[in-house]
Length: 294
Image: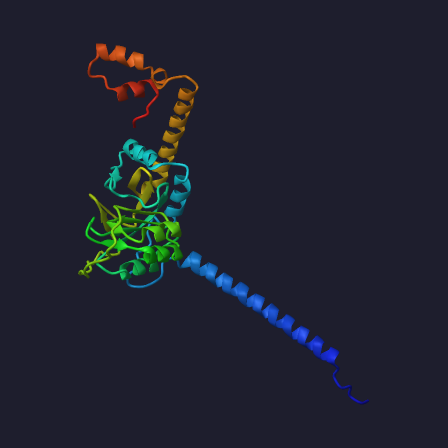
């Protein structure tokens, strides 16, 4: 039987089969690639290398803290620290949001600036999702140490925000990027000199009176910047939520015409204090169950 010459229709059918096979292989490759990327994100958030921090108990805490802090303020967390007997570690008052209304919380990703942007790039190599870069530039007022490129790269690395014990520049660009950035102010000039890098450049940062590390969380909003130990995050955030709920109930009652003085039985306090001059208002609040200051 004579062999039939392939027709144009046969060729079109063969091309469609080949394209379908290629598309299926491409889809498998894409799925495999996405699977590998997902594994890399979940299982290798801290790359291996000489500068990678050792795993610690705070891993994973930053994301949870950020989620819970979304309904809190730094004031709530500060009050929780007082109640829990944890030192209240507030940054100096000069440290403020570049864009008013910004807020951020997460695990501290420390970096001591020594005059070059490469220290931040190296820190980003070890960043875990929702870390907050905390830059120590000694509170210097003669140079800016963070600009728009460092902030853009922070966002690309999955960093949740930047806190700078020092100055920034490129204010308009940083505001347009939208990543929360806190600093002591702005200045046009960048780093003025390259300095010797300390051994702990990527393991700790000093902000005002406090030295922080990956064992700490940072909380920041319009009231300022606060640091807290990561291993007590759940306790502190639970206390902060209780304080918030109490204050909201008290505020609702004030709006409804029931004054705070009536709620805390302030007249009773004044009467008792006349009899016992050493009685403090906090002692009275504890007695009536209306604590608002601790």
